[in-house]
Length: 117
Image (tube, rainbow, N blue to C red):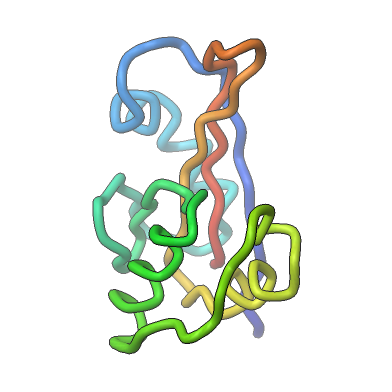
């Protein structure tokens, strides 16, 4: 069976991301399909969620950490909407994912946990 994308969004209730994940861990794990655990991490790893990359440098670092090689492609503004952004997510190994704090009027409103199971 192939990898399946999953997402789970919760209201941002203050505190830090790890606390929010702990509070909603059971529901997040139910969304993943087959993850046995989930945690917030600073580097990609099995059953780990790292901050969603929003800059060229962050994407390059994640490629280097994940694949052990540099990304030899220039990324422009809005990279997450282009083919490279899709390739980056398509290349994401099963059992890894991201968290993204979503804002409205410069205030955090929700947090999205997402990844591949």
